[in-house]
Image 1 (cartoon, rainbow, N blue to C red):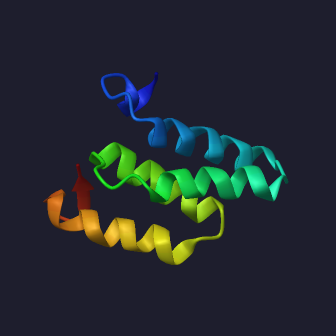
Image 2: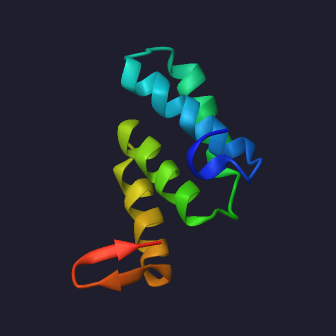
Amino acid sequence: YKGGLEKEKNNGAITAYVTASLLISGYENKTVIDNGLSCMSEDSKLNPYETFLYAYTEALAGKGEAAQKRLDDIKPRANTTGKKFFS
C-alpha cells in the first residue's frame, strides 16, 4: 500500500485508488466504475487521507455533489493556517 494506506487495510480506499486510476486512464466500463463507487459508499469510517481520496474519485466520476459533501464533512476536522487546510 502507498500513501495514506500503508497502515490502514481499508478495501474501500484501495477500491477508490483503483477506481480513480481507471477513470484517469479513460476506462469506459460503466459497470466496473459503478461497482467501485458503490463499494466506496458503504465505507463510513474514513481517515482524512481516505476522505480526500474518495472525494477525488467521486469528482473524477462526475459525482460532484457527493465529493463536495465529503469535503464539507471533513472541514471541521482540519487544522487551518490562514487559507491553508491540513488534515
